[in-house]
Length: 263
Figure 1 (cartoon, rainbow, N blue to C red):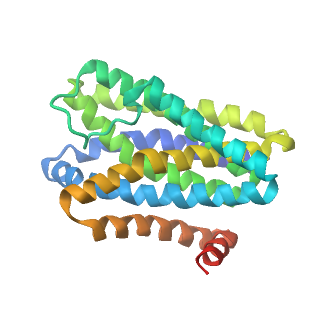
Figure 2: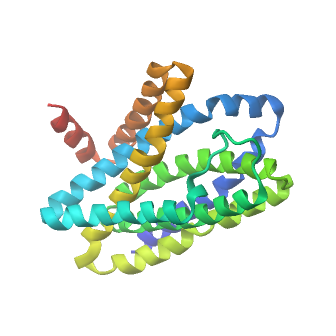
């Protein structure tokens, strides 16, 4: 149990601190490079979210009845949908077209991302409890996504008029809510009877974000830039990264399930 709590705690700490990464791209050359690369990185993280969500969903279907599996995954997707509807700017990104990023829009973005990070923490806890190696894979996927998100939000806040230190502090506070979700998820995961529904909710959250946010934006960027192959390869690279990490951590079942699906 100590190993599980330590894994969750360190993962949450890493996810919170990665919000400081925007400061590394203040230099003009790095800033320009990141602006050009942002949508590619989004496609990369989309591939990661897809393969992790797909793997968790498969495990849920193996461990639970068809009705319970569909219901829990659907509930996760519904939660993500409601967050998006209640706070429309919750998935706002720097690469999206706006003439100016205003303070009110920045407030909504921070509030929405706070809720989003609570769900990230909620994803981590049942994954670590179910299998420490699966928890590491989920943590890696969330970390990479938050790296991209942290850079994007940092520049949105800068354009809204915040100083560098103000933007970084707000990003750290926003990302710290991941601990709230992790504590809640860990508390609920103590009951073996609801472990499978919790994993189903986690899968639904991941697959919703992939399907309704990350994939459409990747497709839109590939159409605008006429670089379909590059975006597909970046998404594929995200999938291959997780398969590689799965092999290194001994989570070989993930590779076997993918190969069986292809065959």
